[in-house]
Image 1 (tube, rainbow, N blue to C red):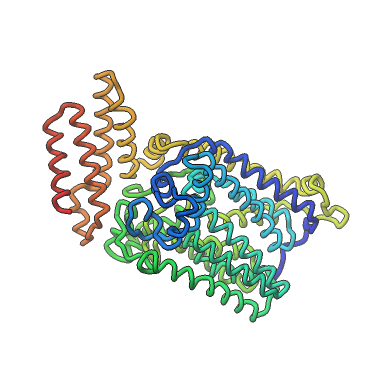
Image 2: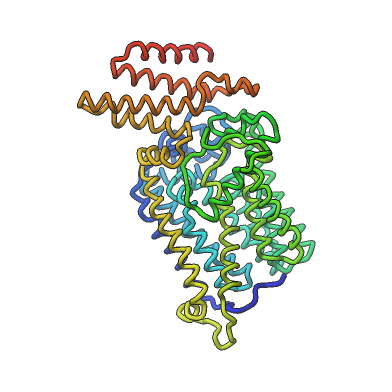
Length: 543
């Protein structure tokens, strides 16, 4: 490959260690405030009300061959991610019901990820420590990662990427030494990445491309790498099959979770998916607007004639054209583009419709492509030509020689850090999540529904003053109504698209009607209490 110009490269182990420790410590300090936060959202089904996880060591055998929420509702679901559940079970064994311990481990794993990422990038970039350092700091401070780190359940994302980095490091060792032991270790760690989260499947493409771009190899070695990854996939698929009753999710996706499931045709589905990809790209580059939820109707179905499809379609076509045209030249910007596109493809809804239309956590790995591209751009624009005698051997020398590039990068890293620190408190507890959710995504039916439940249980019912109590109940009713307006209650809109709604949709509506009935009953409004109770009863009868 054509390496970056060796303007500030050094293989000094001490300098590498110092830079990697800076990254790790930075990552820890950035999220230290979340140690005091509580369990939120799906932490309930994964930890606090998962009776198998709460068995600790005794539950591990069950977790490896059952679906993700089996310990929560004693039936199969469509998710198989046993590794994070096993980790939760071990944590529960030693620190039962301690959210602080769970948060602390998430932060430590994230810091370790930053430490390893720097070393892997330094290795790939032939010891161009400046690019590796800036790219890793951009990644570790990226605000879109707040959901992954501050939300305990998202430890599956951290584990999967962490084992990817370990796998890649083992494979680079194999390419260099032809050690069969390293190849075997890589197969094992890739298997663990798959057990953490199924999106690790994208690494089957990313790893060979990475080796092609950055490592001197022969064809036989590349074939052995692909074979080792395939060998790791087979037992994973077998375990997944027995846990879920199949390999691919065949359950119909609820429209309230992913509006793309309600698209009337593939053209609309693809147009909406590419529109969402455009939003992902904008969020990765400018992480200004983040949200805990983007479900119906925060994102709506669009047609191919919509400008919201046309612009991202042109952008991605241009990016991929550049990437493929520069592939044989091993252009590092081409690699960054491919890393982003391949890792986001599996959750893009272009090929398979998944359980969510969009989520900040799904940008965790793809954001690395953006961080690498920005770091390489800064290097090309601002790094001076370094004379041999100026090659840095200490941290002070490194900063001094690269001060201009580091100063520019520090502005971006500083802004990212401020955004991350200000975003962290959103994940303090469910109440802060629900309140912020309505502000961040006002067109999300689920956000208004969750906020209504919060108002009902924590504000309206506990209020002693009758006047204020009625005022809060009225606000609660309005939130429920907004939720129902954003996600139509009578299902007629869905019938026009010939959609057969799955039971989960009716269950959400049933719970909503019951809550509205309870709210009106507390207000003494008998007519509306009976009206919504009857609606709930009708749904119960139809189930």
